[in-house]
Structures are given as structure tokens and as C-alpha cells.
Image (cartoon, rainbow, N blue to C red; front, side, top):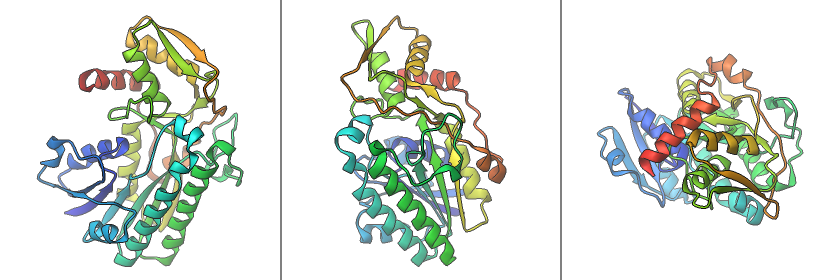
Length: 316
């Protein structure tokens, strides 16, 4: 039975991956948490070992990696648009440290495979979907710190892959949404924040930061988990880097309108132009993931919104 280490198991993406992995009878899962514990129901699963660790400490990294075959690295210091604008350093140091330690330890221990979640913040704005090769070294000022941190970790994955002991997969994913998202106005990204605003609005309106003209590629979280499974099962090469997205960009204004419409609530939209706007349009080209692993998204945006709202109503 293969043993998978899931870092960041109590986070948004981590919770969704954990549910999928525990549904498989051919895996044992070691789930790493830091400040947020696992849900009690998950923690009692017979094929789950929950461990608490600080992945910025080398001794903790060595301890959690002992005896595992594959690593899914979903642990990160994350936050929403507010911190990207006011505290851009928040995403840099801890993420660089924990991933540097993890990659080195995987190499030294001979771990078979590590999958790392990058993102699309290093890409230039384009009218058409961007390919992996479209990164040209120019990162918008808003994303300078987090973007170059992601690129550094990607290159570290490639570096260790060349040394031959461990396979590495890098997924540059677009905006992920769905069950277990933060749905928190302070810490969430656009989808979770919008759902929270719509579902808690008490004065008949939803306030949108900025002008709502920025456009994002939205990918439902189960589609991302499908790609994770495919990469872990099928990759035989030392290193692969690929986009994970829907291939379409939806504006924030359109996204808010869709969420309001599908919530069934009668709300009007107001735009607060005193708040930060990150003016950017981006969709990602996904043919590489399809060619390598036969992957393509299955959940269209409106269906994903319906599923997310149903989960929100049931759980929050």
C-alpha cells in the first residue's frame, strides 16, 4: 500500500485532496497540519495518520517525510487580495523556506515523487490563454514577491529532478474555488469573498472592490484534484510543469452577477473604487496537461457555483 504525505491537509485545497485520497483503498495518508487541526471525522479514518509540524523547521520536515512514497505539497502561507496589496511580503519568506527544506529532504531520502502547487501570478496579461512558455520574466508589480517566489520554487523542483532521485510535478493552477474555501472577507480570494458577501448581505447590496473589470480563470477544485491524481499515477519523467485552468477568463463583475443570480437573492451591486483593483485579465492554456495525462476540466462555472453555494448552505 502506497503512503502519501499531504502537506497543508487542513487548508482549502488540502481538504479536498484528503477526501479524495481517503476514498481510495490502495493508499495510506499522512496528513500534515500546522495551526488548524483536521476535522474530527477525517482524523479518525483508519488509513490516516495526522501529524502536527512546522514545515519551516528542518527537523519537522525530516520527521514527516520518513517512510513516504509521494508528497503532495499543498501547504503555504496564503491570504487574499487585501494582503497582496498591503502586506506583499506575507507570501514570500515562509513559503520559500518550507519548500526549500521539503525539496532537499525529498532528494536526500529518495522520495519517489513530489507535486508542488505553483500558480499563475508570474504570467503576463494576455487577451488569449497563456501557455507555460509565455512566462517572459516580467511579473506585474502587484505580484512581484509572490510571483518570483513561485518561480524560484519551480526552478528548485527542476534542479532536484535533474539529480535523478525524485520525480517532480509543478501545477500552475488558476483561481480555484469550491467546497472548503475560506469564504472569509479578510483571507479569501475573489470567489470565496463574493459568496460570503452575497450570502450574508443584510442591506440589499453587495459591495465589490474596485471596478470589477479584472478577469480571472476559474477552476472548480475537484477538477484540480483530478489532475493531482493523474500526475501521481501516470508521470514517469523526472520533471513536468503544466497549467491547470478552465481556459476561459470571467470578469469579477460577471462572476458577482452569476453568484447573485444563482443564490436566488435580490441584491444590487455597488463598486467601491476607493478599494484596490488589480487590473489584470488572464486565462491559461491547458493542452499540455491534456496531452500528458488526458486531463480536462469537467465542471462548468455555473455548475461549480451551484455546488459551492449548496456546500456553503449546508456547512456554514
